[in-house]
Image (cartoon, rainbow, N blue to C red; front, side, top):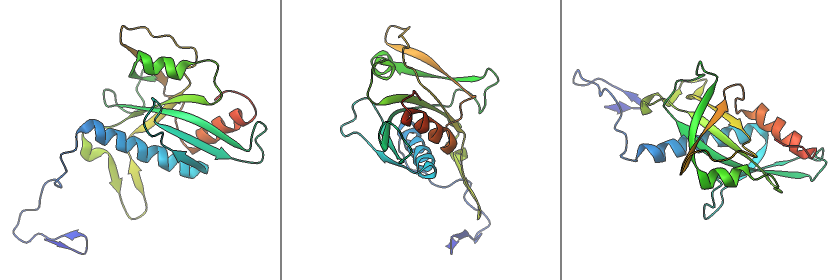
Length: 188
């Protein structure tokens, strides 16, 4: 029985796990990534917009600052991918995600007015390990990394495995740095 948010053992047996919904894992992973991105964007002071309909880009992030040289509002297009095939901070120094060749070509364009990056997130395979909450912290597991794939060429027939270095953690500081570089007329 639940009382004030706490489980009380009435009959000697507490449920082992909460009753989770039947939403497919892929959609759950997309929602988790969106939550991660929202947290990073909020901490960086950015706004977010989701293209509707989805045109191959998951999110457009906007960073406003009078210190930007190119424009006072800088946009960045983001493609999210996730995997559970490796643990956090893999020993090989990268995480690999599969992109369709059409998606890679879109992200890899060299002449763009709005830069694009790939954000790859490692999630635990066990959904129950994705989040943890206590009175003073809310944790999302595991981590996301970013890279620009500008100039990359497809290597497979339909899909290409893209490596993203684990040296490039995608957090609020990284997003601020990306936006500052773009705001000065540079690349992510």
